[in-house]
Amino acid sequence: MALKAYPTPTYWQRVKIACHYLLPQLSITHVAGWLAEQKWGSVTHLIIKLFAKQYHVNLSEAEKTAPSDYITFNEFFIRPLKAGARPIVEGENTIALPADGRVSEYGCIVENQLIQAKGHFFTLETLLARDLEMAEKFKNGNFITTYLSPSDYHRVHMPCDAVLKKMIYVPGELFSVNPFLAEHVPNLFARNERVICEFETAFGPMVQILVGATVTASMSTVWAGIINPPRPNEVVEYHYETEGEKAISLKKGEEMGAFRLGSTVINLFPQNMMTFAEGIQTGSKTRMGELLGNFNK
Image (cartoon, rainbow, N blue to C red):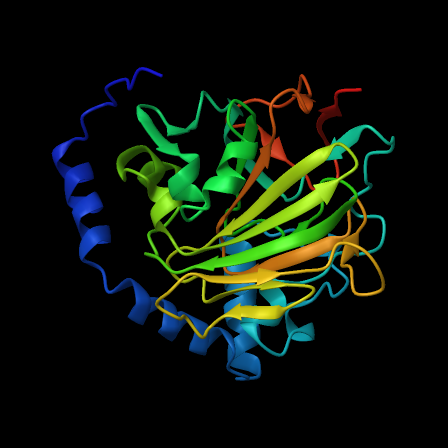
């Protein structure tokens, strides 16, 4: 894959990028996490109200519809939705979108390279924490990167029926993952903190990755709870039984994890396993449960 030259940033864009490199990312994230867990009564409710107004959050679709219904900001941020608010696409061969957000990039993995943004590419090996066996399964496959903005619903769901095989916590940086920095910070998703989840499906392996970011104070999964903090300085692997009573089986549309403040989800599929739906386009809005694509029979 030829690496195209990406647009040269303007002076002020370079300043903005430099600031992100210089920010004390971990300290800011710790403070944000602490603030988001405080129970400040009417102050918390006012913050939630102002946040919802600023980012056009649709609280009418949440189980709790008033800012005063939430004890902490985090409780508001990972608010569950009303039953039926996100219908799950039907059909054994269909794949559901895992999250509300926007398609950052999607398409073919050329050999081992994925596109991050215009002119930026990164490899399966770096994304998957040098797990070469896992990376080999997805060469020349397909991927989709979904960016969750502050206004979005921040629980992440399963795109298909699957059984959990492995989870890997990868320490890393905490750059913001907004579209601007995705265009200007090389290897952004492969250098940020992340949680890699490998699943077995009826059609083959599938990976779903939760990518951390600045002020993303924690990520969680339904089977392990909050993964971070703590934040160990080494890669940590967890292996799971895929058969029997201890197997962790999740159905299409079931919740699998959540972000405490916004971030990105990346899905990987092997070569010839699936075909994207016609409505999937870079920059297009996503709603959890709608059609991502179809498994090839």
